[in-house]
Length: 291
Image (cartoon, rainbow, N blue to C red; front, side):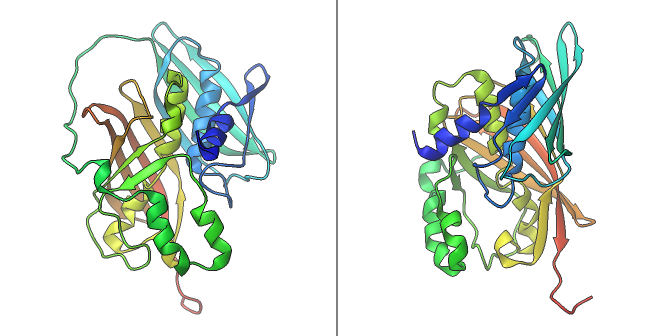
């Protein structure tokens, strides 16, 4: 197990402070300047799960309110909104510096039988046909200022292979549909709750980037201010995140300095295991002196 993977598993093992009150590590994960959105979502989901011992989450809805500070822990307060015969609802508030940074609602359901149907998995070349994230970043790192390189190249817990990866600095304008394969080897043997938390963490990766593609933009050009505004996720089937999963992404709408993004997550057998939606800020950055 890599150090980065161990760190992610540790930060998702949140500490209970009191009844319905938990504390999670702020540092670690994908970013160092602020807390990665998937990090807070996954910890909030874990806090909710600590109060629901016998049911599986089928959906979550979160709003990002303030940027997270990685220098201090995050406090999670759980509200037991409802315990019903089939469904359980929880509301989680994430707090730093005495202020809310995220609100999350999650719904849990007893296992039931029902009708089965899904969209077929897109026909995409498998993960062995594409370079991994460290390989892509190593080739690009020398173009970055030296002070950013170590963080850019540091080890990450989730293995990612983008299908037809774009140029970081001079991308072409292209369609919003895009695909990536991802997995985390250290997820092997983890319980279903941790599998959900790990996939929730990873679901925030590359999602907002779909909105940038039709405009020929990436985060590295300094032309756009981005931030996740909200995040919704639905779990459809059991997860084994140590195996490769295809993340099929698109962005049906951009406007009003916002972009709307969707994702469908399939395992390699073609089973749709989760769906994701997110709206994000896409605010053009104007050159100095330009009104």
